Image 1 (cartoon, rainbow, N blue to C red):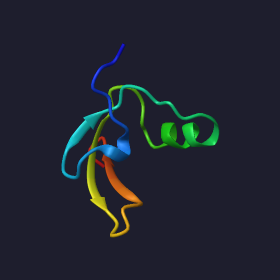
Image 2 (cartoon, rainbow, N blue to C red):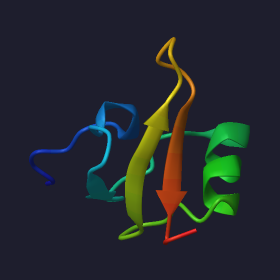
Image 3 (tube, rainbow, N blue to C red):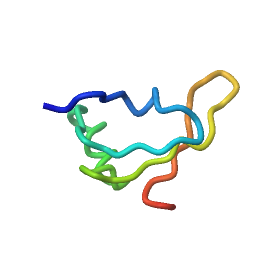
Length: 62
């Protein structure tokens, strides 16, 4: 159905992506929805910790 999809954690720093599928379940899914991660939301990967995790994202320009 969707081609060329990558996971949010694979989004290169400084680039934008658009949410197409939310594959999480349970509390993790609820938290992502609470943060505003719904279909067609624009997300920018802005910062990564020295260890690589966590990663900071800008969601809907906030």
